[in-house]
Amino acid sequence: MADNKLVESVKALEKGAMKLSLASDEARSSALLAIAGAIDRNRTLIHEENEKDIEAAGKSGIAKALLHRLEFTDEKIDSAIKGLEELSRLPDPIGKIKEKRELDPGFVLEKVTFPIGVIAMIFEARPDALVQIAGLAIKSGNAVVLKGGKEATLTNRALVSIIKEAALPIVQTDWILGIESHEDVDAILSLDKYIDLVIPRGSNAFVRYVMDHTRIPVIGHADGICSVYIDSDADLEKALAICIDSKVQYPAACNAAETFLVHSAVCEAFLPRLSSAFASLGVKVHADERAIRYFPSAEAAAEDDFRTEYLSLECAVKVVDSEEEAIEHIQEHGSHHTDAIVTENEEHKMEFFSSVDSADVFCNCSTRFADGFRFGLGAEVGISTSKIHARGPVGLDGLMTTKWLLSGNGETVAEYSGKNGRSFHHKELI
Figure 1 (cartoon, one colour):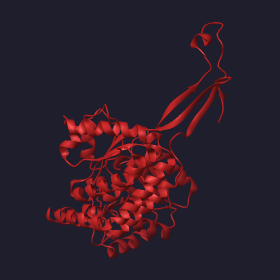
Figure 2 (tube, helix red, strand yellow):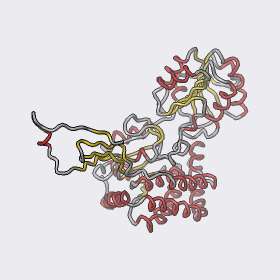
Figure 3 (cartoon, one colour):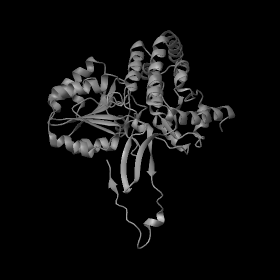
Figure 4 (cartoon, one colour):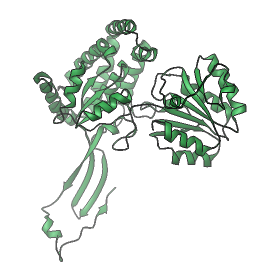
């Protein structure tokens, strides 16, 4: 049960969301630039709080992958600022006409985009994710409740304060709330009267917990078990670069590849090169019985190794005899997040695109491109593997809903009813 103070804070967000949805795009974009400037000016404070979080996390024995996500370096701050600036330049997502239809002369129906309202975002220990989420919320006219990983408590507290203070003179309303305790999470999950959407980012067990303990709609993904399939018609130079980037460029990300499937027709030519590259980069390999002879220091892969999200320099490798076998493996073991094929065969590419049921399906490029910023969405609040509402990187469009607007001239349903009623002509206007 939520305490009165938390309920009142969330109710204030509900009112703030309405006011923010009515603010001009110029005001919301100006607020983004103000936030970017405030983060830049407060680097010292952010670093001090982040170092305290890192020190505490290190003493608690946090996994290296999580520690890497927790670090809010100058490079990450620069990237966060750039993301806010680019987001400010994107078109206004509010009020876009999706459909426009004349039911009868002068009787016009429109379907337009509108903010969802109050969004609760529960995410892992990534301070840069907090900045992205806050930026997307204000640009899309939504209020947001933020709960970051406990490891980043001090960093997140500082960021929420900086962001709130920077935006307030421009938007003049409550639109952001940071919460910190597990009890607060349980409390907000009960506030279906005031919160319109929950987006959890974390372990499979945590996402399932959220779904099982709220009546609020939930979108998001649990695991990022991403695969790269090297086809019989692959360009092996491309394949090697793609495999390395997909695994090594940022192994702690949910779009990093965890499984590599290699067609038997090219395994002899390709796997020794992949083995050498991975060995030099410190990648631990779990290989199936057909692949292991190419990896001198690999461990024999068990079935669970192909269902594991390593989030580190570790992966599983398997040899397959056909594209169909690769697709079946992905369907059985993957998490419907991001999967890629490397091939020069257009027919094989289209078969992969059509058959792999994932939010993001790529050809001849790294799985690491599954990202809202790289997609041109400005940023993302996460990647959704849901098939309802939003799928893939959830950017501005994923934080919008729609409403129907009907403009008439005194029409009544009675006029259009019965044997002699008028007929609609349903003329499309866009």
